[in-house]
Length: 471
Ligand code: MN
Image (cartoon, rainbow, N blue to C red; front, side, top):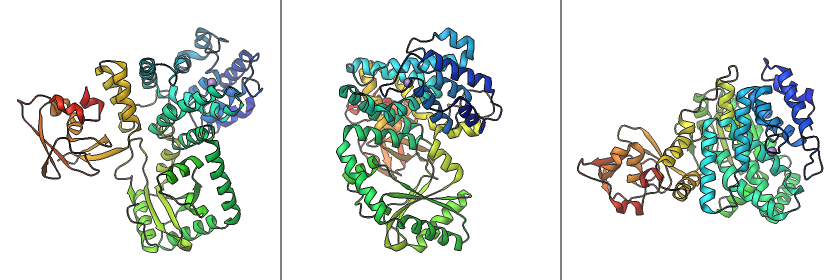
C-alpha cells in the first residue's frame, strides 16, 4: 500500500501547487474510517482506495480526483456522511464522491431489462455531469478486477467480470483510455476463460525465451532506417494483451508464430509532417501488406485517437505492425480523456471541458434519452451504438459524419438534422441514386434528396440502426 508521503510526492511531481495538507487529510480520514474493514484478500480495506488513488495519479489526474479516489467508498460503506466530506473537503469533492457512490449502487448486469436500462440511463446522466466520476469509477473497477481472484463466491466473480466486459471496458474505450480498456478486458478474460488465456500466456513465454533478440533487432533496424532518411524517431514495441491476441486469432487475423507477430511497434516522431514522412520511408524500405494502412490522423477515431497504422514485411522478413504518431498523439492514445486534462485544466480549477468531438457520443446518447419512449427502447439503442464499429461518410460539402456500422442514408439524414431526416425522399451515394436502405460504406459521399411534402415513412424503422433515426 502506498505510504502517505509517497502519494503526496507522486501527485506533487505533476501538480507543483499541491496543498499537501488537504491530500494528507483525505488519506488519514479514509484510513481511519475504514480501519475496521478488510478486503477479501485479508488486506486492510484502505489498501483499496489507496490503490485507486495511485491508478489515477499515474494518469496525472487533478487533486480533486485523487481525493475522491481516497474517499470513494466511505459513504457507500456507511463509515462517513456526505456532509462531513463536504465540510472537510469542499463541495466539488463531495459532489464527485456522491456521483461515484450512486454509480456503485447501480447493479447493471443483474436486474431485469427495465432496471438495467434505467440504471444505465442514470449512469450516463451521472458521468455527463462530470467525467471525473467515470474516471474514478473505472479506476475503482480496475483495482477490483486486479483483486477479483480473492473473492471466493464464483457467481459474484462472474457477475463482476461480465459487467466489466459489457459496460466498463466499452466506456473506457469510448473516452480513449486504451490501456485501461485493454487491462479490464484481459482481467475479464482471465476470469471467464482462464484456460484459453493460460495457453496464450504459455506460448508468449516460450516465444519470449526463444526469440529474445527479435524485438530489439526490429526496433534498431526501424530506428536506423528512419534516421538515415532524416526522421528522428523513438521506437517502442508493446506486446498485445492475451485477450486481444485471442480475439484476433478468433477472427483469423493473426497466426502467431513469432513474438513479433503479437507486438505493435510504435514510432513517435516530432511533428505531424514527420508522421507522413516516416510512413513513406517505411513503405519504401519494406513491402507493405495490402489493406492494412489506416490514417487516423486525417480521420481520428471518435474517442480522439490519432495515429498512422501500417503493416509491412519488415526486418528479417517478419510481418510487423507499425503505428506512427507524435508524442502529443501518443499521450492521447495512452491517457485518453485524462490527456486532455493535462493540457487544458492542470492549472486551474475549472471542470473538465466536455464539449467537442470526443464527447459527441455522450451528448447523442442523452438526446436519445430525452426522446425514447421507455427505458428498454433506450437501452436497445444505446447498447447498439456503443458497441458498434463506426463508418465515416461525407456530406456533399465534405463534412464528416460518423455513424455506426450498418447505417443507412436515413440514419445519415437524421444525424445531419432531424429536418433533413423528416423530409428525405431519396439519396445519391457518390453521385448515383441509391435505395434509402443501402448500407453506407466508409468514405461514401452522401447527398440526401428532400421534398418539403415528405413525412417519415414507418417502413424506415425496419432498416435504420441509429437511435436518433428511430425516435
Ligand atoms: Mn471501491
